[in-house]
Image 1 (cartoon, rainbow, N blue to C red):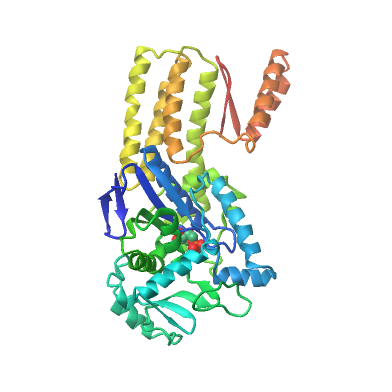
Image 2: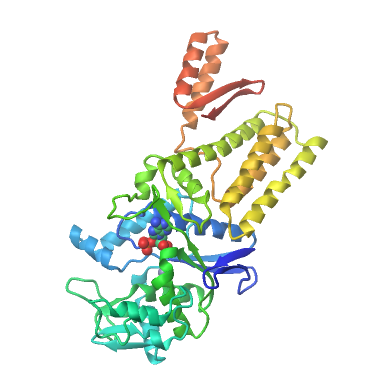
Length: 468
Ligand code: AMP
Ligand code: ZN
């Protein structure tokens, strides 16, 4: 299995530290509002990578934090006249709801920076003791010049960063070097704070992730992931902190997802082309959003538009309709043993799983993996007929469901959400009407179903329905 490593800028064979185990840390959202469609991308992508690793037999420990101390959170709390905890608790709950909707498996650990203060203070102390950090007027800074590998992830040179930062008028005169960054800062009036040896204050954002990764996974981890905007400065600074404090390499593989743009423009609040995931799921279901995200390679930028979302919806429907047809066949046919011809076809269908794995083994190419699922669907639609055995339907269904499951794609509608029961009831009523020779009512029901986007087909096995 090959993964693209931002640290080396190339695809590398994946070799975990411990056989069959993967330690993975994914930077989570800052919880001051509902997550947006951009945040949904790392959620879905790294969940899919985790699922694939698990499918390959790895025992994955997956850590995703919530950033719950931040200027934006304080601003929001002040605007609403409530404490920061009210804001963070509310939006953590909402983010978890969105994650569940997207069929993202809960992380093994979901740590919060505010609950890790003693460990954060401990790591900052270590950095000062080892000569990688210094304190000035209650603020602790990381001494970037002390860490010779600074810039190894982003490819930036410290000299260039210093030159760039020196031109800024708001430069902090307490810093030894303009590229230094804050590990701890004193509180301002009305801000939440914690006691520390340096001041009553709060940690910088970067140190939080270094500490949580160490606490829940150890000094050296296999995979560290997040959106590409985090490469610099966030991940660069995490490396500087963790490697200096722990005296060990931090992460072996750095994975970054590309951005989601809106109508081919960078999504941003100021441009007003910004969508929360909730805005979107008011119109298209969560599973379509997940499918849409997986339709592109995770490192490429993807464009969000209504047309592309609809196209993803149609693709997903093709899979769901095939699964519905297979389930219908299984419920309405017999034969627990495959015929010789069917056994050969099932054998042949193994090529879709091979193509799927080839795609995923090549830096998690979910777009090609989905293409393999579509080929499988086409194969099932072509080869299943009324004479097929039940066993054949079952074998095809199992194969398709297995691949979809790895991608976290549910092939059946949630009973609670879908209108399956109503549809089944109307179909039963139509069957009864036909039996009673009330053809006018039967036609009426067919028209009603058609208005609901349901096509029905009378087959020898009974009435089969699918969505348009
Ligand atoms: P934030 O709350 O801004 O720290 O972001 C949480 C996660 O979402 C990080 O991994 C970001 O890199 C990622 N992210 C933010 N915006 C986008 C976007 N437009 N497209 C893809 N990923 C994004
Ligand atoms: Zn982080």
